Image 1: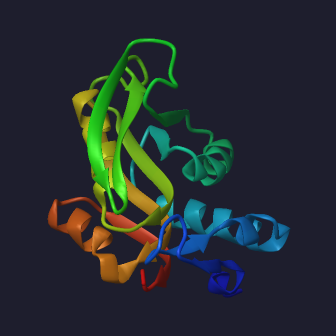
Image 2: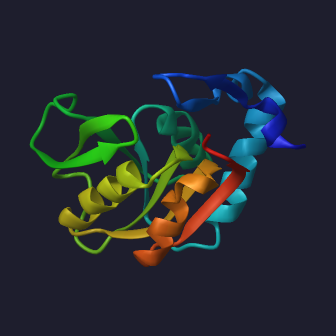
Length: 175
């Protein structure tokens, strides 16, 4: 199955000049969604990790299913002011703005290894912020798994240069 066939491309969203890769067409197809989860599960088995984290919100769709299958705890990396307990926060730049993500301070024990899953990597700013959250929580990033890599925006290459392991299921140009 070619997962690329299940990704819809929407020009000029969320703003002019952005070509948005929409996963809703993938997840609404049960066979494509199942294949995506199966691929993430298989590729993640090459890494040693104790927990799975995902970036709000589309990363939750994939990571929660993988967490269930692999019987690993799931950590939500959320937008600012969405978590009720004490948090660590990291500010970062997006392709089209700035944002903050947070994690509960008690989500990760010292030395735990965390697999980070998200739907897409573009420039790598959000992913690097997620890694910083894991690291300031005294954890280690086992690897990143992305469903979509916008290869010409350089995010995967950036993470690899920062010495992170990266797996991508699908490659698309970003523009």
